[in-house]
Image 1 (cartoon, rainbow, N blue to C red):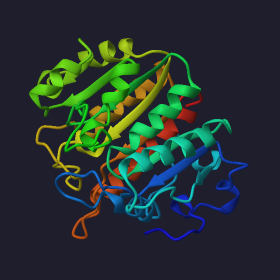
Image 2: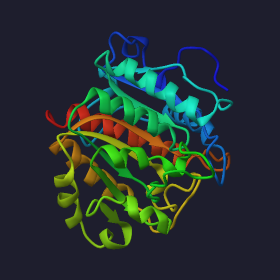
Image 3: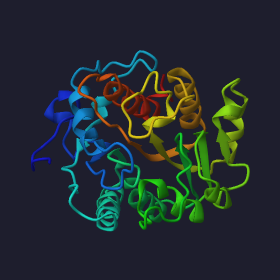
Image 4: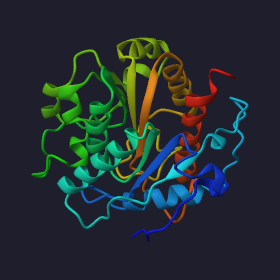
Length: 290
């Protein structure tokens, strides 16, 4: 469990990590009580921050050092002992708190159930919101194992409220089909051959977008440390190519990265998650001037 203390992203200087001077807020959510196969995602935020200390802070692609715009890390709002319902409420409240301070709010999980609370808060703050969901699994169950806040239900509520564009899907239960938004699911077996799908997917998004990225959207060959890995996922550069286009065309209001499950024998997935996070911030703030 986390201690109550101040955290710094990548060991950056204090002047770039105060709330007052930071454009970005990062909320770590060390929670995995709804995980149904391998547990350990509650350790994801800690591993993420540890890996960040070994990342170069200059981004070659955008010729920028986005950390200088400030990244404030919140003390984790939950521990793993509370119910999933209570966790969702706490994540909603803390996300809303920083959204209404006009910060760019980001989250690192934890299992995918954390997104239920954050999406609620983003939906209240921003009209005309759509959700870009990148995942191996469709996560549209209304309830799983008696819990509507299970990680397998992470996008059900969003599917009832917002346009939900789902990318990289390659695993689902037949009962989830009735909750699919027609034409909004980009299955991996259909999109891996070319990039034509990117433009179509972006056109389906509204002006304001929240992005939720499950680490298992990536192929396990490059991101093995996740709770429910599935073969046949996205590669690194295809993912970045698509996300860069999204940031160029839409107004990204926030994002989360979830389902990082650290493995003591390999840390490459921890580093991938950190690099992805930093890339997205670079795209958010630096694309216009690059």
